[in-house]
Image (cartoon, rainbow, N blue to C red):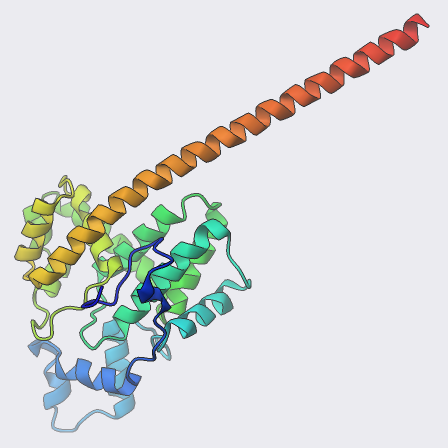
Length: 294
């Protein structure tokens, strides 16, 4: 996308994910972030005695979802390096590498934007994408890759997963679309400054799509329009979400087909192995019978 530097999983050849140009310095992003915070955080700016720069930076990191001493990677390459350092291995399985590259790339380019806001929807979407596109990997490996991705982005895996779980519980307690959209975490999104508009990311979109079924709403273009309108999100971001929704659906279909094919291949391999063992057993029995007859 020319207007939004976010990409969808599995699009490994996307020109976006080959863009490694370094974004502006983190200090500039933090200053712009603090300047655009909602009025609820006005005390940070209007205090008679300004807080030390280290405290302001710490507050901004907390709002962005970064832990103490953490900051977002300034380039996609840095995010990749962070990932492998956290993962502890120099490679990941081929069927997971494309997804890892795309989620790291799209998320890194989003979180360094001055208009990025970490929230529980982003957390839920990140978790849901990992659960969906890493489902073919063993559980321990899936958890390790997920944690490494989150860590590579300068965030805490424990905090992100906690935020995602809390939002799931909020949706469960709400029960209805109207109640969920009126809940505290969703109203916080609605209260974000409109200029510049909220930075959209595939993880945020995935979070929205994951929430809908939890309140018995079938994801669709109409549902997306309602939610975008209710949360007063820039309509242009709604169009991006619709495109990502279409891609997500097609990707899930392809993943299901791939898993079915892999299951059939495994079953075929087991049948061949069983037939081979049977032949060997029959040959051994025949040989033993011949020796006994002699």
